Image (cartoon, rainbow, N blue to C red; front, side, top):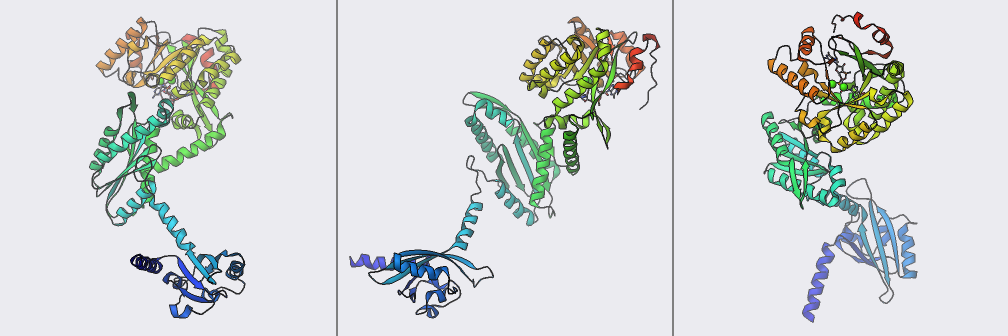
Length: 562
Ligand code: C2E
Ligand code: CA
Ligand code: CA
């Protein structure tokens, strides 16, 4: 027994001298009888200073302090609590102490226990920053990455930073469920870990975003090669629990050379910018940060803000470009091309705002405006001659969300134009990639409008595939047409395409005809209709009168001007 009590005593003594909790014992009047080292460290004392003195004085409390209240309360009620502020020996900021008081009536002693709240707050904050690991993947988080980057960069090392994003991850989650989504993230994590070497640091920096930082990597060619290997490693087919997904991965990367003056934050931002760029360019690609991206990003943000203001006003407009028969150059129809009449920038072409509109859900407004304006102006002409048509462009995202079908139906009702006189142009590449868009194509076709495949021949095009689609018009891509005059193989391809398309009952339009020689070749090949600067440049809707009213034969070939 006595051995135990010795041990207990030793333990008590040890704990007492090491505890961060301050303990003191007083008589009922509040005079200190004894205390532990932590208590001595409150304020600046040494032990001899303390014993025998009133505790409120020792703790440097004013006469009407919380402590005095608590001292009275503890005698009456047995316990009390007080939070006091004590001038610190270490600096100008006072320390906050929480005191728990207890009165032992039997021993007639007052016990006091204090914890340093400032230190606790500091510890909690430290703990929080220490929990730098992501719960799901066990990878480090963004804060940890930033710290690691700062450390490497401040030591003057060159660093390469790669950010990885899974394209369409929300869709994967929605389609297969969140558990599946988590599993995908875990597989990516595993692959990333295997890829990361001793000089690397990997982190999960967002829901479906990962980062890899590699120290002492400076050579641009090596960085690029690494980015591409990373992309290759992560993208492609993944099978989880017998479900198969095809992962598309975007990689944005940026590097800081040895002794760079950029901060970790700057480098992260640069890699981020490159990553969003990869997304904006369609995803599933690797993009290296370029300083000009920042300027372009600012411009895009500006465009987006301005576009929001333009929606619903007459700033959104359309130009039209005539489509003609090859032989007699008869005007058969117009293609409506979106234009933005910006109050300061002037007329903005579609390649400067369509993508922004698409990304921010404003394409429907563009389509509505284009149809409203062009039908408003050409309605009479179309109703008078049912052999004429109006062509317009629809993006695949609009097909996928089905709004295009509504907008087109509405335009038909309002204008009284026969559905067969409207031609919806969609590009093949985008259609093939999106099964939902394909379905919507059937719905569009059911309204009676015609469907044209735009830019055919620009990429990997397959004529055979067109059999399965409700398509009636094929528009041959400008780049292909511009090659026929000097490239025999392009000529052979166009010849074959035109013949096959006509064979399966499609109408064919050659786009971008700029030269007489191109027109001649197209006529020889048997291509029936053409569009291009040679015959007509896109013009305002109020400039179509001459073209519409002009007798076929008097349509002069305009001199080319650029
Ligand atoms: P696209 O559908 O292939 O439209 C034809 C583009 O080629 C037009 O450019 C037209 O001005 C241009 N073009 C016509 N003939 C010639 C020629 O002989 N030589 C050359 N070099 N170019 C010629 P634009 O108006 O700048 O439109 C560019 C693209 O923007 C369009 O290509 C289309 O993909 C898209 N776009 C235009 N309007 C809309 C719209 O209302 N909605 C959507 N989603 N996209 C649109
Ligand atoms: Ca088009
Ligand atoms: Ca086109």
